[in-house]
Amino acid sequence: MDIKALIREVPDFPKPGIQFKDITTLLRDAEGLRYTVDVLAEKCADLNPDFVIGMESRGFIFGAPLAYKLGCGFIPVRKPGKLPAAVHCIEYELEYGMDRLEVHQDALHPPESRILIVDDVIATGGTASATAKLVQQTGCTLVGFAFVIELKDLNGRKHLPDVPIITLVEY
Ligand code: AMP
Image (cartoon, rainbow, N blue to C red):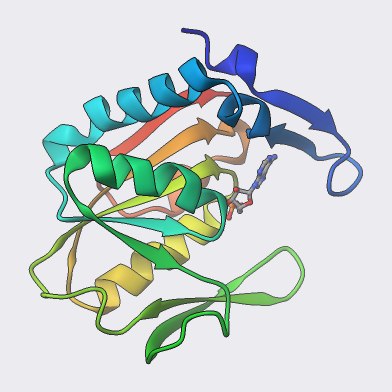
């Protein structure tokens, strides 16, 4: 199946010069959605994770069904102030200014857990790299990353630790 054909490219969103990769057109296609999650699961199975971590908010959309398929738990990484219990947090740099991600302190447990990080897109790699640091702070083992889309020119993978990086389509 041609996943790329189901991804809509929207020019100049959210600001001029950005070619936004809109996955809502993929998500609304029943076969496309199933195929995407199935292929991600096939490619990630050998990594043998105990938990899938997804970043708010599009990482949740692919991360939760992937965790279900792999027989893992799912852990959400969220923007500040959304998680109700005690959190670990990490600050990371954006193009302008800083942002912060949080995860429940008791979620990344026990420390020998094997963690797979999932998001829809890897662009600059800032979000995935910050999430990896959050995982590594807890002593858990990061076993890999999975993204539906990789924006090759931005070379986000150079910011990621040396673990397998699974991607389905490249631009
Ligand atoms: P990154 O620059 O890798 O930290 O990407 C930050 C987040 O923005 C990712 O979680 C992506 O979901 C999203 N993102 C970045 N660039 C794009 C793009 N061109 N189209 C769609 N989503 C994007």
